Image 1 (cartoon, rainbow, N blue to C red):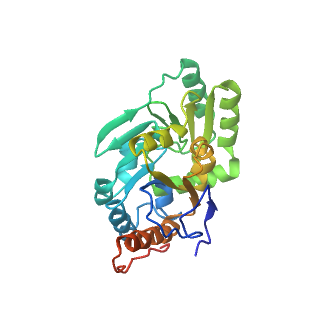
Image 2 (cartoon, rainbow, N blue to C red):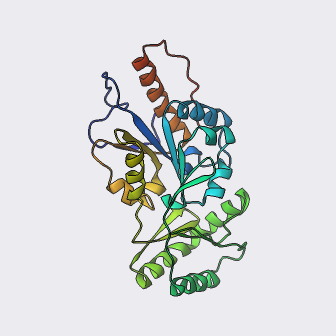
Length: 280
């Protein structure tokens, strides 16, 4: 069932590996935006997005994305956006709800860093760059040498080129050496993300637990996020919270079907049939 999943279970688990029969605590869910798509998808599966919207109408659900808010919101169907408790964009440096900005962490990057990034971009051997190549967030710099607004075909072409040339790895090493007070990682196969060490994605957990004081946090992250920009949050996860690394939307739909059944059992109602979405 979970052939593409790897679970990191922290503390007592009320998930598929240990059923809790007592009244569940108020759970708050955090989803990595990229984990809501299968690898081949450019748009979210409509059945899955409807299923997730139904779930989000009953539980506080948040999204986490390395993209800016406008790009993140454009990927999420409007019905689902309306049911969400919030969206952490730009690697969690902003929290939005219904197009209202609730939290923002600002940082002024030094001119030397901008100049270094510009030189690396100019030195890139990739032949089909499409401006803009750099997205400046409130406390993030995101670089995509193929272009930050490219379509699916252009992105696929660049990822194939990058797999062969491994240019981003050289850029990451160069920036880390020159600016040790910044964190640098790949946030996708075709882009990298720069953040100051004064900001950590561990603040996402802090914000959520401050807003939901008695809640348990349940996070579903893709492998790239868990090993990259969201790693500080994962490392800081409290023992009562649950972190699962998933392979895509089909894994999440299976996990949420369990959560829906658990909610229905707690409410003492007859479970309704659930639409499970498998990889298209």
